[in-house]
Image 1 (cartoon, rainbow, N blue to C red):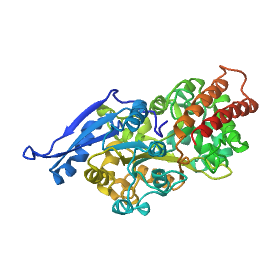
Image 2: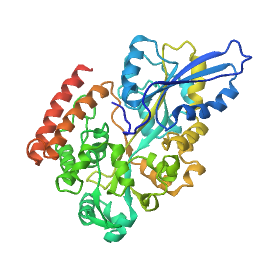
Image 3: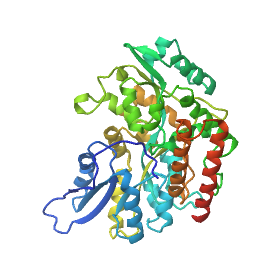
Image 4: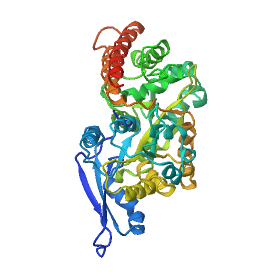
Length: 443
């Protein structure tokens, strides 16, 4: 139910404290919950918070790191019981749901202005801080994720294909993948495209850009009904799944998750994948430190936008926001912490630690980040970013979509019935029917 990629980190609930001076006998204590977004989240948060602690010696911050897989259950339980932290990270698709439970402290106009207000952030990200049907703001954007195409420049060159032409539109992209498929690099054949199937928690996010670019959507404009079975949405899903049906995506990829597909890209299995900015950090990091710097892929890759459909080439743009829980007994200090973490300098620092994108415009354009040409290429795609409608019922709705799209991938993979455009339409009709029931009950 989160808007995040499948990345594997150490599991379990971890705790750490950043202590103020021992002389401060009456130090206020703040509890902060964040997700495991970096390889060493505890250590990185300690470093990120060091200037804040130095400037606020009467504060103590206890940092708890949650796994994305279990965070939704823990956060909703905290929201229901009123026993949560002072400040917490929320996936951008979660803010509407948790605020609708009455668990978040609304942020005043003065607080919003102190953070820079809507004008300081990417508009798409600011739109996640409040419900679709209510302008009351409950969170501030912290860091972002977007998607783009990563491709092997050496493979394209050997196949005689210009990336600009290949990613121009759906027709040229399909032709390019057909020409590339099976190209030999170092005596090893490479598949044209890699994407995961039903075993990935990003299934909806993987499909959304294609659906939007065909003129479809996953929801009606008022957020009250499913649109996943519309003519345009089904057209996009049929196009997307045709790559696997035609053998341009190996059938084995459909059993993998996003992390495994990324590993396959690094290992030379796929010429193209669609993923997020975090792999830029991996390709800048030596293997000795868990990265991919020495791989052939790291020395031969480029970034491109989604191929344009009839309605453009939008990408999925999401991330995480920070909010204050209504149950906090230290709201003034909690706001200080939230404002610090969402400030320009903190966002630049955390982007370097995590590989994620800043949500602030001034941080995203920071020279120290823009000096990396691949980062600059990636940021250029964000202008076409789009997010789902911020509705309280997104969590259960996404679960419905995940289940039904999983059934669809069984059809694509030849495990259930025969693949056809009609079979995909029927699967999406079933998804829409179940989704409408969920949406109706969540109003």
